[in-house]
Structure formats: structure tokens, C-alpha cells
Image (cartoon, rainbow, N blue to C red; front, side, top):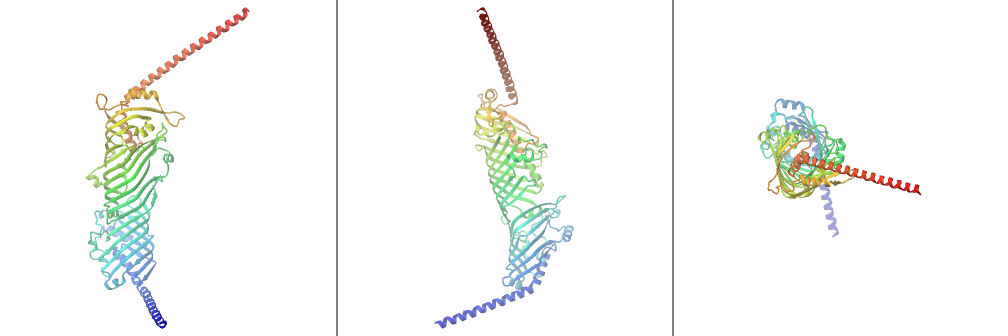
Length: 614
């Protein structure tokens, strides 16, 4: 038994030694062949890059390591450099691409390059090409001859490699933690943008006799996957930080998803304007779910035109605040409406449909007179925009951007509103119309108290309809406002008081002489009003709409300029009557005091006379 164990042990030792020797021989052979292959591979790589790019790019690297046993290799100190002389020649021949690239990285790993297939069948198939921490610079210059160019080469790259390869394929190319810089070379001066921590995966790259004609491929690739996590950058004016979290895009689906997007001001509401020294709208935007579908990536790469079929924004908020206690901005805010700003975006943009779902919108002002903040809110806003574009060819077909939205005013009344923006109008023309359903009027006190110095005691909104045409200078329209049992208190700010106090006498006059408590009235006649609002020179889009609608509401409830003048005249009469009454009271008091003085003098004289007689 012991002898048998010893015999088996010797057999195992011999087998192990044989395997070890075989591995050693294979390793030495692999190293020897790798050493012999290095010059050939190095030359072939450089030749491959030159041929496949029509000599536009050449590759440089400081070192190459190969392991034929594992079929892995790596290049160190890699640079892919464009030849600008060739680029200029291609421009003259009208064959130059719109983009040229500069690539640098410390190490490029080539995993499982299938040596047997390469040697026997002249097919170079690579399982993975891995590039960690590459620095990529992309320079864009638009050429007319590339208009409507297909996302596939005019000449098949196979023509450049067919002399020594039947096929060149890479299953996966992983570019991890890219530092990407984009240079726009189309203006008077180049403009640069950059992004870091970008990850790109390229799937199924293939050069063979048929791949260049495969319409399912983009630039010989089956799929491109882009990921970006936790990216934050400051706006050029340093007033905001823009943050992106978890951006994902795949060409196979044409869909881009962003988990969250934020436009966050650097300063608090009250400090924002103070940091500038004047009144300015402060925006705070937070969105948790965004997606774009049907993105044309080749068009964006070629011409930096973002074309998408549909965009969805869900579960977020847009807050606008302005401190009106600060001095206004001297210059006019002409050309600052949303559709005008869209036309000023440097990149071309076209989204056929933009959907909103569960978005909260609010506009707030800090008022000079009341020293308080008033806010109007539009909660759970949903709907869609169509033809969101600044592209001339799209505007030539349809110059109108439209929006149809449903929201809840102050979270109470359902409001259906429609916008129509003229994308070509020099004066920023747009129109809006809407219908507000039933709600308790007291819900509006959050904005009427601080900004209008009016508190609504009672009042039920039955229906409010409006239609307004506006431009950079003015708004004109009509309003129908049906309501019941309206009663208000007029407020004022007392010195030393933090809260607003009621003006009893003026509130009585307002309810008695100005306000229509019901519309339609007792006679059943519905009072309709016209809107004409001159835009404040420094007024924002939200401020302009709010002031226009507030004017219509004021006129509808009876607060017209004529009635305001009437009550001012009446108040002046009451004030004069009060002054006259106080003057009469003062005269009567004076006469009373004189009588009392004379009585005291007579009593004093009588006492003196009595004492003298004694």
C-alpha cells in the first residue's frame, strides 16, 4: 500500500515537472516570437492607422508589449495625431471631415487578438481594446461639401487594408474616464468646452468587404454607449452651477437619459441681486428625470446639430425670484423671451415634441412697499411643446412653436393654457390663452397681499378666460372673469411693523364703491374687460405675463382707473371733512378753554373783593 502511494506520487511529480517544463518552453517561445513579432506588429499598426484614415492620422507609441500565449498586448505612450498638411489637401479636394481628433494616453491594452486566426486566415479580430484616462481634443469646422453626408465612408476602409488583411474587427472598445475637449472653429475666434469623467463604449467595429454598406452601422460600428456621472460646471458669469448626474446614451436605441439635472444659483434669493447691485431674475431648476428619443448622433458629430424626435422632462421644479427692492437694471430686456433666447443658442437644435410631466413652476417677487415676498405657483404642470427649434430649414416649414399645458394655480384651480411663439418675429411676438376653473379666491392671497396690498376676505372663482397677444413692448387682449361674493381688505405698511395692517375706512369704501361683488351681476350681465399692459423696460417674461393678467383681473372686479380716481376723490373729501371736523372741534375746545379761563378769573376777582371788605 505504501509502495503504491509512493509510485503514484512519483508519477504526479513527473507529470507536474513535465507540465512545468512545457509551460516554460511555451513561455520562452512566446517571448521569443513576441520579440521577433514586435517590429512587424509595430510597423503593421502604424501602417493600419495610416491606410484606414487615408493618411490623415498617424500613431506614435513609446513601447509595445506582447504575450502570444495569452494573445494580449499593450502600447504605452500612445499618441494619435492628425497630419494638418493632409487635412488641408483634403479640404482642397472637398474630402475633409468636419472633425479632426487628437488623442493621447499612457497605455492602450489589446486583449485576445486571436493570433491563430490572424496567421492562418489574415483576419485580425480583437476581443477588447481598452484605453484608460485618454485625453481627447475634437476640433470642429463645418464644410459645405459635407452637407447631408451619410454616416459611412465614401470609400470603403477595406480598400486600404485588403492587401494584407481580409478582416479587421474589434468586439469592444472601452474608453474610460475620458478628458474631452471640444473646440468650435467656426467663428471669428475658436470657442472651447470641456468635460471629464466621460466613459464611451464602442461595440462591434468591423472592416470587411461589406461593412461600409451596412446601414445598421454608424461609422462601421454597431453601437456607441456614452456614460457621464456626477458632472458639474459653472456658467460663464459664475452665478450658477449646472450639475448632471448619470447621463446614458446608446446609438442602438437613439435614446438619452439623465437621472437628474440642476441649475443651482450660487447665492440665496435675497443675496443674488445684491451680489450684482441691481434687480435680476434668479432661476433655480431641479429635474429628476429627463430623456431624449430619436437622437441623430451622426448629425451631431458631423455638424453639432441636436436633432431629436421627442424629449420628456418629469418630476422637477422651476423657481423664479426677483428682488424688486433693489434698483432696476438700466438697460432694456429686449430679446429675452424664451423663443428669442432659443434662437440665440449657438448650437443648432430641433426637438419635434417636448413633454412635461409633474413639474412645479413658481414666480416670486420681493416688494418694495410691503417689504414681503409674494409667490404665484403653478403646480403639477403637464403638457407638451412642439417644434422647439432654431434651425432655419425647420422654421421655413413651420415658424411657430406651440405649447399646450395643464396646471393647478396655487395648487387649487385647474388652469389650461396654450402658448404660440413666432420663432421668426423680430419683435418677439407671441400669444397665450387659457381657462381657469373653480377655486377659492382666498388662495390668491399669497400673491395679492404682498404685491397688491390686497387681502381677499371672500370670493369664489367660477371661471376665468383670457386671450392675449404680446410682443417686446406691449400686451393686448380680453378677459372674462366669473366670480361670486367678492370682498377684500386694503392693506398698508406701518412704520415699525413687520406685518401689513388693514385700512378699515378705505376697505369699506373699496367694497362699497369700487368692487363688483358678483360677475355676472344682479342684472345677469357679464362684465368683460380689455387688457393693455405696457411692458416694463427691464421686465422679465414671467413678470410681463403676471402684470398683464393682474391688470385684467383688477378691471374685471371693478378696479378701473376711473373708479380708482373716484374713490381717491371721495377719500380726499372725507379727509377734508375730517380736517374740517377736527378744526371745528379745535375751535370749540379753544372757546371752552377761554370760558373756563374767564370763569377762573371772575372767581379769583370775587374772592379778592370779599377779602378786601373784611
